[in-house]
Structure formats: C-alpha cells, structure tokens
Image (cartoon, rainbow, N blue to C red; front, side, top):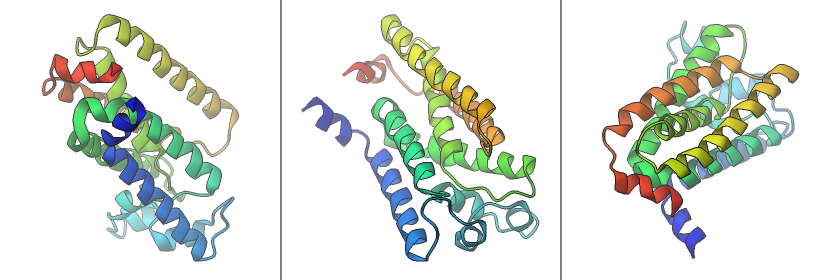
Length: 207
C-alpha cells in the first residue's frame, strides 16, 4: 500500500517515463536500430544539433531532444534514474515544481551540450535527470528534512555522483557538459524551491 500511494504521488514522473517510452517506440517503428540509434534519423525526429537548433533557429529541438534516446540501453538507464529521482522528490516538491524542474534543467543542459559539442547530435533525458538530482541535493543541504533523513539520502546522492564520475572517465560518449549544466541548474532551482516549502513537505520524503 505504501508503494502504491507513493506511485500515486508521482504522476509527472510516470507521464514523463511514458512519453519517453512512446517516443522510443515511434523511433523503432520508423526503422531506427533499437540498440544503437541513428544520428540522421534522430535529427529528422527532433534531435539537438547546433547548426539546426541555434543557427537555423529551430529552438524546439532543445525540448524535443530530451525525449529521444539513442538505443534501448540509453533509454532504460535514463528511465531508471528518472523513476528513482521522482520516487523520492516529486511527493516532496509536488508535481508542478517537479515538472518545471525537469523541463527547465533539461533545456539548460541541452543548450550547454550543443554549445560545448557544436558538431555533435544530442539526445536523451540525462541532463534533466541530473537536474532532478541537483534539486534533491540542494534541498538535502537545507533544514527542510530531519537530520537523520538528510544524512541517509546525501549518502545515496553521493554514490550517484561518484558512479557517474567514474562512468564519465571510463566511457566514451558521456555528455559531461549536459550532466554538469543540468545538475548545477537543478541545484539552483532547489534552493529557490526551498523558500516555497514547509516542514510538512519535508516529512513526505520518509513516508
């Protein structure tokens, strides 16, 4: 029952996961390789690319690209991260703020990605997911939550950060610019959100 109630308290997370899965299903139906993706096809469907997004003023790609993924593994890892972040954070800050954080940090991270990699095609929700964890980390450093709760979840966030730093070092193709921009913009939003929340909101983290 506790899990069911938690899932009911994270509707935006579930909708976002659903949209990402539907987009991926559509790319598969158009003939894209579900394991590796295809840059040309992804561009046609709305991927992020500096010459098109900025130089040709197709700014909508900053939004559409965060719902596209280059392969099933890419999709699955991002959706697991989104589910975990939403499971803990959405019930605390409520759906409106959560959705706002996802979209804003996603757009910021997508812009920084193509600004830093101007010849690369960018897709994926990872920048927005890092934004969600940035919001969470910022709130964990405030008095919103009880001290013992803060300590436990700060450890979890620390593990998340360490694992992603390791992945960035040992793996090719990791978009560190997007991840860092998403995380930092999320942290800024988290500190802004803090002034709109109460102790009662903080108590929902451990329910």
